[in-house]
Length: 304
Ligand code: NAD
Image (cartoon, rainbow, N blue to C red; front, side):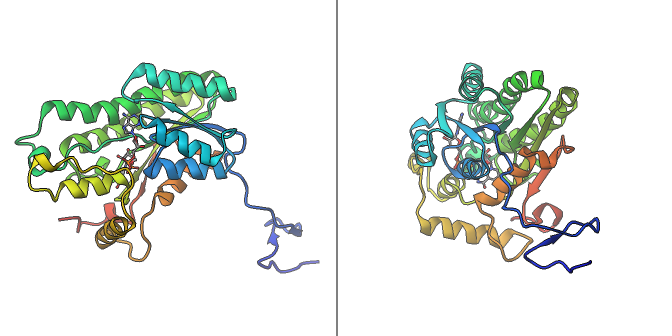
């Protein structure tokens, strides 16, 4: 007998009758993940979502106090933090070693740690940027991602499985959206993703990236603050936790630019894209850059 599907029961699609409802699956059940820069912002949202989906997570962050506090709040059996500067190879190797020693293997690396660099007009111009600052941004964002790929792949390749997901940016796709070093570093991540996907595919390891548009994290809000100071002497205005008021104002600015009208881009939206690429649901996807941008990269009417 044929019954019609209802919202309580799903038709199995093969004419074989009704299958019972299943609880929302834990999409990373049993998997072990490292999230760099996982102590706050987008990284924190990734850590929270991964934990909800059953992963055991190692946060690798220079701010180990914030990382330890987040880990403790989420449950020490499932989450821990290791102090790690992603631009220092020994730190990255140690983070991978820690995950393997603690949990027996590594399934997922999220290269999320990143820096924007100074946002003053002089610092942002190709006519006046500082070579040392340029180098510092490239070291964290580009070299950091490459070192993560290297050491994660060394742990993953022998098991012939693994997923590496890096957080690039819309500034890794288009010009005119960030300081030169930042744009160069994010284009570098997209390129590294393609190259590493070519090489690591033979070892069963997938490599992808996500490219968010503006998310009201401490990074973006500190940048916005810097853009509004009169001179460089006032640049010491970084905050780790912006006020709700500032977050709302920043979100409004971003909404104004987005092509898709309605939703506000939140850290969780980026985390959902990372979750998909980390999980086995994306098992045939490698070398891809998934933009999370409300359609902005499809528009010719961009910022400014
Ligand atoms: P954030 O500054 O709020 O958080 C970054 C985290 O990375 C912090 O916990 C910080 O301690 C850590 N970190 C910084 N340098 C590090 C290093 N050398 N080694 C290890 N950890 C380090 O930034 P966010 O907005 O959450 O950004 C996360 C990622 O998303 C970055 O790669 C950023 O470029 C990218 N992104 C952000 C936006 C945005 O609008 N916020 C848009 C596109 C892409």
